[in-house]
Image (cartoon, rainbow, N blue to C red):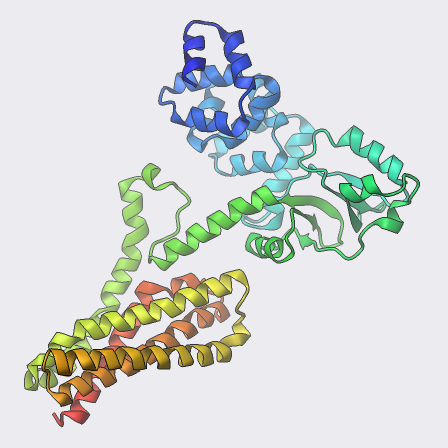
Length: 444
């Protein structure tokens, strides 16, 4: 890029254009993101060959897209929007303020404008909002030769031609066929005889996360989208699904860390916004932690009688919290991947009970050796701590396994039932077990 910048500074725009044309559009977008001088970014963008400018634009960062749209002429805006795939255009427009959307739409032709408005009316995160209409459709009466000729004529500006979609006169989706099969079949074969009639499709209103799961389950590279009458209205391609998986994973990680989800990059999010995203859950967890304090106050007589018991509270609470977090993380991931269903709650309890019994016995045994033989803690106190540790681990793992499934059944994101919340619940349970065990064994 340094060479290209030098050529531009020397006003050798034709040479710079030729150098840019040799590069991959993704690499050009990445290079533009590294340039701090916004005016230079616009200069470079303007000299890009027209046939790759829209592709580069689709990979650029949102802030740069906005600056370019505000810096170029209406005619240039129209060229970009008309050359972009519809799904990329919609993704960009969804992030813009209303006045910017109006500016862009007024520079598009009537047909494109109608299509974009239709896409913008689909619910957010639905299959309809992420699909594209750039696909190849075929008639079932066509021969293979006619189908291939049709693809040659119409497939140039389509997002993918790997899979073609067979429709009837009412646009009802009847089958799919791969370009590979078309090439290998006899040219006189009829499409309806060789098309695949058993295929996976989604409705325009299906959630994008459901669509992503279908891609993973069936190893798809594209999927047709139909309306309620099974009319073909668009397709979703794997590149959009990768973005969705990335978004969903980021959202789950943020929720598991007790933060409000945000799609903004960390370094580009204001300090105030980052604080807002975190403060709500911190307040909830802080207030819920008062229950732990109340439990300690309730058993104050136990602590005063055997002061050494207080020394083992952090270890019990930390171990219980960690045990619960391990289980919840695995269950949340299993639910997200579709490996675990809500109906599997009894299987999960059985599995976590078995794991917790094994881990609880090992942890309690090792802890007993450490306390009684190495630290010379009295036998009764060592037994009290180890019994409490065992039951805390068992309870923590079962609770960590059940809560995400309960959240799923209640139609709440299971990621909410993650480390911070489960740790708070397990802390309270650990203290109750500990002090109750101490009162019984130590006869306090």
